[in-house]
Image (cartoon, rainbow, N blue to C red; front, side, top):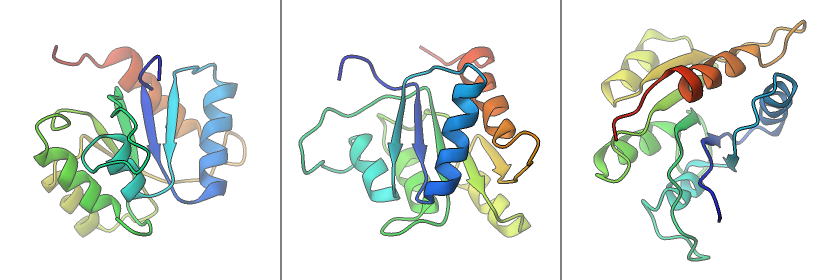
Length: 144
């Protein structure tokens, strides 16, 4: 891979993923992006677990992470990202349909940088993801 993706989007729901990707394109956010369909694939992309294909681990600027996924859920991905020295400081934005205070607290306790409630606005689908991407890619500064 010539250039690391700036965004790793971890989402198992194809419809939600399509909305997010269309919104990013429509808004002119052309950051290199990689999609993991579940938590296991995300861990492999990040080099936390060995990849069956032996791919080189990626180092994104931000991870957008769904919580409820098959094989490995988002809470486990977040826990493993934070305990791995190579990924511990990567910004992780949780995307969830749950607004339960227990879920939100658990994410922050595990080291999430942000928690966004998934929502659908028919006038502007995916706008909240565009706003978050612009913040993490344009305004936020990472330690070197």
